[in-house]
Image (cartoon, rainbow, N blue to C red; front, top):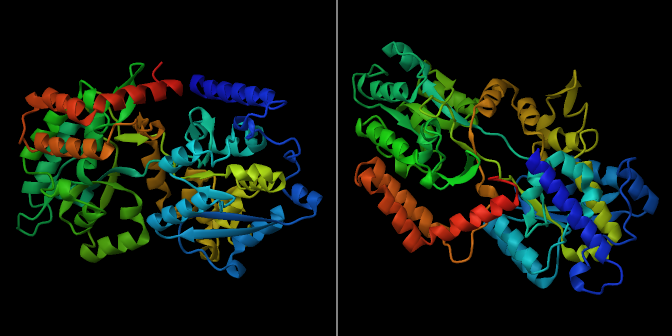
Length: 516
């Protein structure tokens, strides 16, 4: 609450200051203040704004995505057009690179969309070039949106203390350890509750012929590279390498956490038994999922969709009808239980408005109306989540239930410009996986802050990340003794300018209210 109030106070003071400077000052820096003739938001719903003007407004939005139907088949567009008196033209680009190129061309030529997706680097670049509308003075007109996405998400759209983008409401964690229960039963082992039991179980799965085929063709643990050990790092109270988080009231980088050496030592010992996927650090994409489904591994750190969606269940049954995967809590260790880290600074997307749109206050207000409407649980939020009520979904005791026509609006996520209430949405869309969704979201995790941090000048994250990955591989495979860990840190600072990142991250996070 202290952090939230701090952000609210900062935004309020900034808005008041800008508004107070608007009159009689011709400084172009102040032209982002809300024009006096911009229509005030109505509590009677967005329809009133459109009807009052008697004018349909065309809005153009671009983003990445796929499977958007033609306008005459696009039920979501038609409903939004009707509710807001707009003609919404949404264009989606399947390729992120293609989208980036198209956006750069349009921004450079002054052919601005009315609302468009930006990543963090684009947000910084375009805002510093003066191409984005500073939303700070307009936050009162976006109150419904702010309430919906939350104050933490407001922070994610800021650059130099000003809000330049609307960030989507946060997602929830998907990943946990999964274990072959039928293998546990075969070897008469309990579900591992500690990291020591996890290591013993992984070794038994490697040497105990759990699949009963008489061949040494199984191993204990797999996952996506070092993420396979996320709960093990968490058991020592340590984030993943390079993560920033709060610990004992201070901002800590995981590489400098005193417990990191202990975590690495335990992982090194576990790898030495031969119970870990020998290709672990080479796994890419969903190779670890494929190994689990094929019956090669008995423990995998994986998201629930890739083991519990219908097509995945069918694949598992095809390989082995008796395979039974059990979702388990993170094993405990010296610092308790933490199912890895969860970046509370990350966002599934953010949308910006061009500064040029302030010259068209009527259209600008309609963009605000759109964002507020799809952020209103009693308005358009349900539409962009589930489609048309009583056609694509029904409400049973207030809970949405999908109908057999729900597939007609399977693309509705493309219109979720401010996000969605993730838990309720997923449990409605994936009712059969409801228990797995809830279980994953409720596991304790270290809250990392990386999404809030912008890289300082002179720091190359690609070089540093590559060096960290290479050296950690040496540590866990005992190619470099952990006694040389401090030397590793020294090289990171002297040749990778890592100290610049540490200092900048600390400054940025403290400005947002973290670390005391």
